[in-house]
Image (cartoon, rainbow, N blue to C red):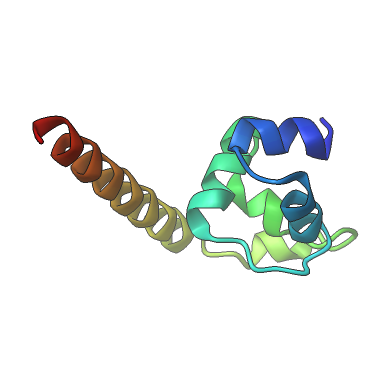
Length: 89
């Protein structure tokens, strides 16, 4: 998958995707969840350093999943509230 295609799927600039790939900018949890879903992989795999599979073994997946879930739910709730408010007006 190209950075350009991923940027289209995420509705983000391809330069932003490049910065994420090079670790030049931080990765918000909701973006991590979106990217991992698009790629069909576990979010922890995106955090693994190349050549260091040990990182996943020490990663607390339950805590991470809870954090990602809360972040995604907050984002969805905020967007839903905004959309409902717009429709009611």
